Image (tube, helix red, strand yellow):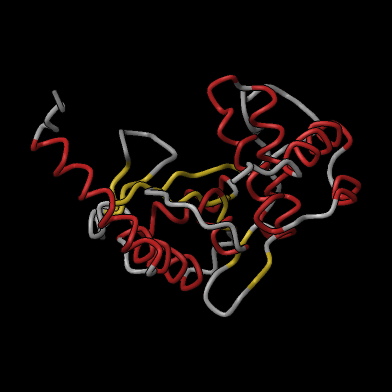
Length: 207
C-alpha cells in the first residue's frame, strides 16, 4: 500500500520549492532585505561587510538562505540601531545584536568585529573590522572569500552545532574549483582543515 502524503506537508513542500525558485531568481524577501540594509548602511556611512550565505551566493556558491548576516563594529551597530529601530526594523529581542526587517520579514544577524566565531572563545581567527577588509561593489560591501572561508572553518572546528560551516567550505571548494594553495592565504590554525576539505571535495559521486 502506497502511503499518502499529508496535504499540509505537501503544501509545505511546494511552498519550499516556490521559495527556492524566488531565491535563485533574486526575487526573495531576503534579497530585498539585503539591498535595503546595504542602502541604509551606506546612507549613514556605517562600515559593514555582508557575510554568511548571502556573501557565498555573491561569490558564486548558490544556496538558499532566509537571513542576512552583516559584520559591523560595536559603534556601527549602535549607529545602525539609531538609524533603523522604529523605521521598519525591530530588535529580535530587547538588547539583542540582531534585528528584524519587518518590511520583508527577514532577520538581520549581526557579527561584531573583535568577537570570535564558533564557540565564541578566544582563538587566532577573529571577526575583523569591516572598514579594513570589506570588498566594495556598486551596491554592496562583502567579506573577501578567503576571510569568509577562514571564519567558517574556525566556526565549524570549534562549535559542534556549526558543522554546516564546514560543509559550506567543502561545497564552495567544489563549486568554485578553489585551489589547494588557497590554504596559504588562511590563518595557520585552519589550514589543515581547509586541506582536508579540499581533498574531500575532489571526490565525485558515480553516475
